[in-house]
Image (cartoon, rainbow, N blue to C red; front, side, top):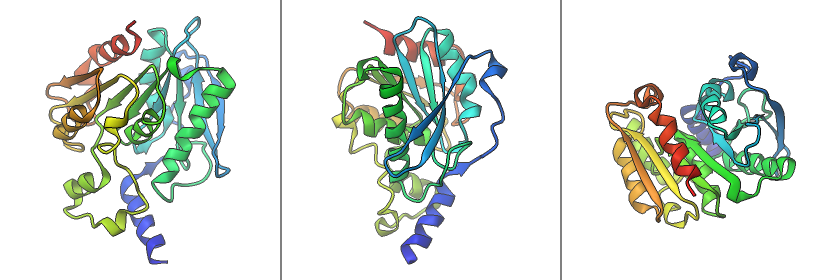
Length: 255
């Protein structure tokens, strides 16, 4: 019972879901298909598939810990306009998705469901899928990329592991409290089977820039690190400008 209470406390500190969909794809001129992804534990996860006509590549986007997929539509639009389809995948409890996050394993289950939908419903082979992990969304992206090879993996402001990021924000993080939240990118980085690009703002106050550099050092080749000078955690898109999309696009789509 104590661990259940502890997990609820950790979830409340890590995840900030919003149910209301602030925007719809049509608000950005995007044609879309509803994607309902069934998890292995029976939860229906909602997403949007945004097709770039004539493209054989798709970006599977895992968002950060706040809001929901609707606020990521501007990012998705940039990829669609560059000729890459996008699956914006939510997590349980976010937007129209069922359920709620209870342990760290839940976002991995949700990510696997989204990937399985993309493979099964749209027939994308892994070599045509680009994984994109935004902040905490880097966790499921790295987990998948450590298991099989994809076209590329792009990580935006990723943290090393939960214990370190918790200590950064709260000053302490006993291991026994975090046992149900195996959110550890650093240990998995050497296992990546896909080309990786990490983008990080030098002034990131939420996830220290040094964490992104450490993950980059642990990653196998081929890899690139894209440093955005002066960018914080939540203004990295604006500070990065068109390069924020052009650099990852060129990296992922190179021959």
